[in-house]
Length: 293
Ligand SMILES: O=P(O)(O)O[C@@H]1[C@@H](OP(=O)(O)O)[C@H](OP(=O)(O)O)[C@H](O)[C@H](OP(=O)(O)O)[C@H]1OP(=O)(O)O
Ligand SMILES: Nc1ncnc2c1ncn2[C@@H]1O[C@H](COP(=O)(O)OP(=O)(O)O)[C@@H](O)[C@H]1O
Image 1 (cartoon, helix red, strand yellow):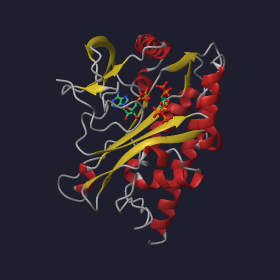
Image 2 (spheres, rainbow, N blue to C red):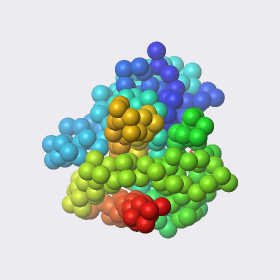
Image 3 (cartoon, rainbow, N blue to C red):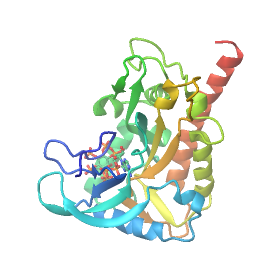
Image 4 (tube, rainbow, N blue to C red):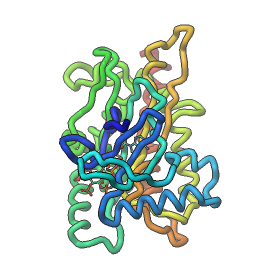
């Protein structure tokens, strides 16, 4: 039985009779092929990428595993539609905090229609895409005060300027209330989630190193998904203390193009800028600990 994903934070959502992704209870994520070139383009990307021996294994692990396409009953009631069958990257988490960050200082690319270009550039200017080389598209965090999930509205997230994006990245790793009026984010989980040999920063640096040389694909309008487990944080210090299993995955390949031997400078620049934000949060956190705060 397929159902609407509990932990989706951006993109098209399968609610109110709309077309969107579905999940099963076997850890698979079914993303419907959009009926224009986008769906076909994304499926073509997954076919090419999953078989591409020029992509090292340690890079393959940053992408959801692809299991081909399958005809399944679509969420909008329109009957059976082809869906990409992907690894559900959050299925192994019980209380995950998740953030979707769209990378690049532009989401349009050469040869798109004038109409699409205008739509993209408007959003790119209104958000932090142009100013930062990335924008937060959506996120949900586990509110440890309320023991429930907290998720800001889409229009609020898309309204973030530089400070809003920085604050969101701090909230993402904080244990105190995410509600603005209550307190400033304490970044209590920054070192476990962003830092350490297996943390988000280490993974982003590994990805960046690949983007410094890869010229196979251009990842237009693609997102970095960050996820970690909150149950491990709740048990912190106890005998059952576990790692937060922080993970970086790339998603949304509807607009990937051939790289044609050219570096993907749009993605690379965006990821460098994003890394700097994560590093700054970690550095502030470390200096506060040293000063006994
Ligand atoms: O429909 P919208 O305006 O919400 O835009 C979608 C974007 O939402 P946003 O408002 O930027 O968060 C959405 O962005 P996110 O996945 O939410 O980051 C996609 O860019 C989507 O396009 P595509 O499926 O990648 O071709 C976008 O869908 P299309 O408008 O291209 O169908
Ligand atoms: N493989 C996946 N596993 C789990 N969640 C996913 C996966 N792919 C996407 N998602 C969720 O769906 C959201 C939208 O995905 P995306 O591919 O960007 O869709 P769209 O093309 O509709 O924008 C992501 O922000 C994430 O929350």
